[in-house]
Amino acid sequence: MRTTKSLALAMAGLLLATTMAAAQPTEIRIGVALEPPALDPTAGAAEAIDVVVYQNIFEGLTRIDQNGAVQPGLAESWTISEDGLSYRFSLHDGVTFHDGTSFDAEDVKFTFDRLLAEDSVNAQKALYAPITAVTVIDPLTVEFTLSRPDGLFLFNLGRGDAVIVAPESADNNASEPIGTGPFAFLQWDRGSRVILEQYGPYWGDKPSLTKASYVFISDTATMTNALLAGDIDGTNNFAPEALAIFEGNPQFKVLVGSTEGETILATNNRKAPFDNLKVRQAIAHGLDRAEIIEGATYGYGVPIGTHFAPHHPYYLDLTNTYPYDPAAAKALLAEAGFPDGFSATLKLPPVAYARLSGQIIASQLAQVGIKLELINVEWAQWLEDVLTNKDFDLTIVSHVEPFDIGIYANPDYYFGYNNSEVQALNETLNATTDEAQRKALAGEIQTIIARDAVNGYLFELAQTGVWNAKLDGMWPNAPVEGVVLRDIHWTE
Image (cartoon, rainbow, N blue to C red; front, side):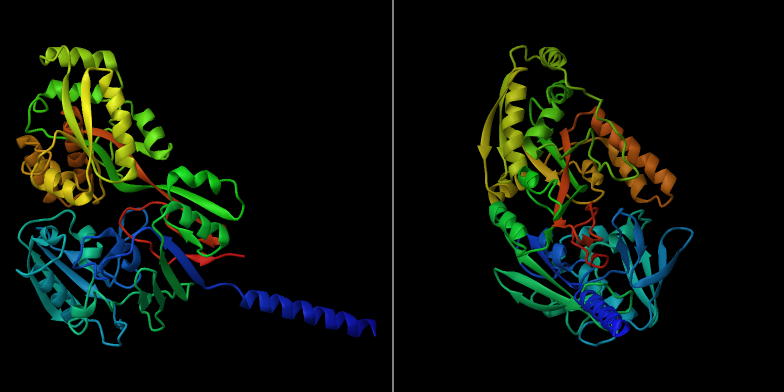
């Protein structure tokens, strides 16, 4: 009898363990602040698009990993000609789009012919301008011909703007996206959520998740309540001012990493008195980054001294080029002909980091004699006044595009920096594929723009995620836009 009871108990325990194992969740609900305007990353600039679809629904020939490195994607390998003008890609066999149609070299050619067409609406079309031809060698081999060497070519192929689409479905991707990724589009409840489901015939490693919902929650209090109530399982970028609610709570894990968002006090270099180097140097000496970071990011920003992401292997720490020194700032203003300082305007877009930074910077620069009038503007007005018409003195904005130091080689860009040495270095950088040489060139450009105090370099935006403690595999950093699902899984 005792043996029978023991056997029964053992069997009951085994059944319970089996049931618990079977109950391991495979679905996730992710809170995101913004609803995407559409779901085609090749036809829209909004970051919210990539947050949902990048590497989930759509894939490129290459992909960017969480460290910002280039990895094989739909191309399993490639070879580069000695002159750097020809890239031949070998494609994975057996890949299908979510509608069942096959993927091959013709789809690659279609994608880039469409991207480069005169009527293309691709937000980053200029990045792919060096492509002069895309040639189908055979169904699993495609060759790109470039007009000049492009050291960022493989990286740019891994961006959301260059994901591969099919001629059969491309026109409908804005509302019913069809890609080759590990997750297929299931439904879009406008104003509420987008739901993805695991794509069974996926060509690569099968993800642990079977379903993912991106839930749109724009309000911090609502997001907080949704996390605490278990209505969502996490969010990739939570408001830093409310993180204390979750830090130390064993039910959650807080992941703090960096993004590609260089936050700068952008300066109109073409306009007096900011065309005077001594004035820009004075501003640089008048900025207390530690106070700005504490006040505007609640301590989560990373200080920068140039326009480059600190997590990037090319980054130089130039934060001490112009250390906080109000006395030095006043002396430089006097040398520049402004012993009593001057007045200027600071236009602030409608994001918390800009508005908070603006208040702190106005107080700091007032101490050295620069009196700022704060002008709050909406994004549409900022885009028109600052970015398009260059009608501003100072502004604050985060530049979130990866590896965008090349904007300093464009004298027509909104902050109007015109330096022939930087332009030549950038041209060489663009044509260089050797990593050591690229790093050295990028370092030279970083050093020059820091020395010239082109802008006030403040901090790198942090990515502050809050997740259920039983989730793992989320990216702490954001080297590109997106919440990549492939490695996310539930633990015991």
